[in-house]
Image (cartoon, rainbow, N blue to C red; front, top):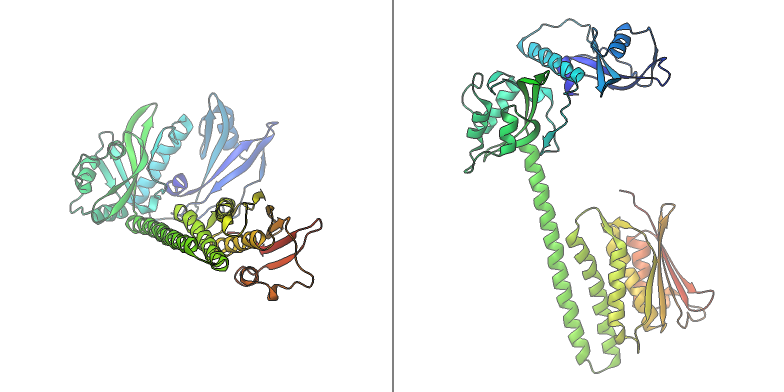
Length: 441
């Protein structure tokens, strides 16, 4: 886009065919600073030898002919860039003259193999465009031209004087208003000594600076500097970072509070006189603990998806640890398969459901071995819990079951918009299956 915008032209990249019978267009860039000369896409078009004589000569001799510029790799010409200027008349001004002059400089560097630069200092993911602001420097880093948009960007930083005829490095050093010396990266870019991108910021604004040294036959004769006012963009990025940090802190505090509640329930359970009370408090502790595990994972990662396998492994460990409240010995519980990362809105209700099923298998089925099977595919996420317990009684119905299974059915069919099935296993014990739609983010 940079070259096309400066050249006020469409650029098409042509590659020679394997048998040298012609060329194929593999890339096309339209300018944003001028009307297009190639309205129809040409990517994939084949041009036999002789159709474009200038491209053929550039490919054969390794030099630019008219509007064709060869691209070298070592001693070979591997491609040709064709320049298609707009045929519509324009009133040339100083800005347009600078655009075209700079484009000629960069295209000459392209033929020599010095553009794009091999070593680039890149401290920003953003890239300014030509229309955002353009500054030309001479070999001493002095400003020879500054576009109106570039001047506006510098004014946003607090500049109150003209920039032409002055050293850009000194101007940016003054505008940064940092107590320490200006960043070395920014100094190299602003003086035209290095290619790269960096931010200059103060208490008022932030401006992205991109520098491209201009050279011919290894001798630097100036530099192109593009600037873009990114104050609003950086402000939004900072707000997002602050929001993420706040969300992580909320999850962390919720996790701490839930763990405190779980500890209180455990203490109360130890002091309970009746087995029924101990079991009830143990159930409550497991439910609170399962939710705490989810919030602990969310406190580490505030993305849209959460690694669900890790949560299930933590819940299995929690179940084994608390099994003494429901059984005489801890069961063997293992996870089989994986369902990868799930959307955060599905994680909590699904984790709660699995926790309830594990508790039901230990407390009521008296299972010694439990398997949690995870799978996803065909747009569905499936969780199957199998145990070797006593199985379900004849005529069993979830509506007549205890609170735990009713919670599972409510979460699976309601909040998760899925299906829940529980039945006796083919080889004994029971099998509970939860199937929910897979949400693709």
